Length: 207
Ligand SMILES: [Fe+2]
Ligand SMILES: [Fe+2]
Image (cartoon, rainbow, N blue to C red; front, side):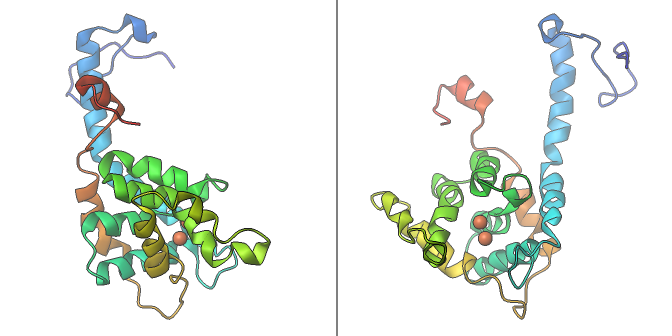
């Protein structure tokens, strides 16, 4: 499809016309920045829509991955955890749909710009820490998590798995509804604390 020339209808209907990024002007990138901000503002909606893709697949457990996610978040919320922690609990398995071999990495990468270093670490490592509860049934080392023993976040991650993750497969538990978490998700994803662009602008380390 041939791109339209830049038009003036409204800021959000303006399009650029360059076909190579190297040809774009400052005016073009001002247009693109507006689109980008508009797109970013809908991030929470896209994330929650993606979370709903977990519906239906139980993976053999007593409840599906979507209900498991709601249950982990509900337990964290009822335990008095703050919004950021509850949102991490809600989204910790969102990568199960397209990152079957490293689902924790996908959730952690998505959350990284918006949450504390500790919450990021918990989500990123919850897969191996969760193994404490079942790896030995599959001929693996249930204590694989201990290779992180010296890390400051070890206990926090072990606690997340013990209190909110390994026990959230109960079909009789009274889960909160997704809508009850919507404001928390919008609040957490409102502004990134760090991003690639910010790292280069501010000369801070985003790794
Ligand atoms: Fe997980
Ligand atoms: Fe989980």
